[in-house]
Structure formats: C-alpha cells, structure tokens
Length: 111
Image 1: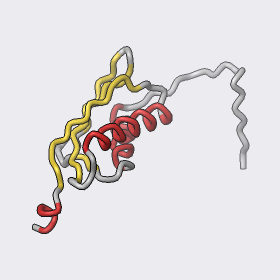
Image 2 (image 1 turned 180 degrees about the vertical axis):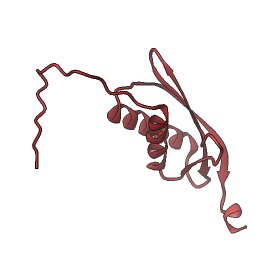
Image 3 (image 1 turned 90 degrees about the horizontal axis):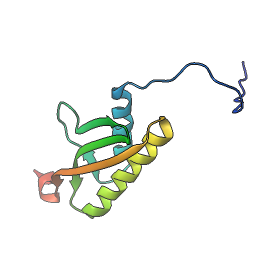
Image 4 (image 1 turned 120 degrees about the vertical axis):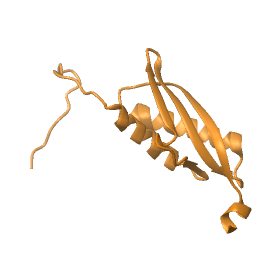
C-alpha cells in the first residue's frame, strides 16, 4: 500500500476542475442533511447554480414539512450548502436563495 504525504510548501502542478453537475450534487447532499426539507422533483431538481466572480450563487427550490419553523429551515439550508460546497471544492458561496415551493402538511400525508 502506498503512502502519500502532503507537503504544503511544495509547488503543485496541474489543477482540479469541477463539473457543475458535481457541485449540484454536493448542494443536493447538503439539503438532504437538513431535516424537514426535500428538493422539488423537477427536471432540474430544484437546484440552479450561477458561477460568479464573487462565488457561487445558488437558487434552491424546496418542499418543507409544516411541523418545522420555515425561517429556521431556510437558514439551516443556507449554512449546510455553504459549508459543504466550500469544504468539498475550491469555490466560495456568495449567496443562497431558498424558495419554499410547497409545504407537506399532516393532512396531505394521509391522502
């Protein structure tokens, strides 16, 4: 088994690039970590990303459970996306806009 050491003083050659689908997948995983939230089942899966000079601008469309506080959920979604994208990629997150498109209520679940 090979062992690799990371030497931060050495000059690295080459670069790492990320496909936008990879970043969208990271965003979807981040949303999945927040209880009471699910992405909309649309063809773009409720995630739109714009890569800007200041960082990624994310537009997220979600469905929330009615038993949760919506402003708190939106904040937790924003924090989860920012943390996951910035820790897994080289990108910074400039803004996350959360659009609540639907609410799951207990009455809807029984139908």
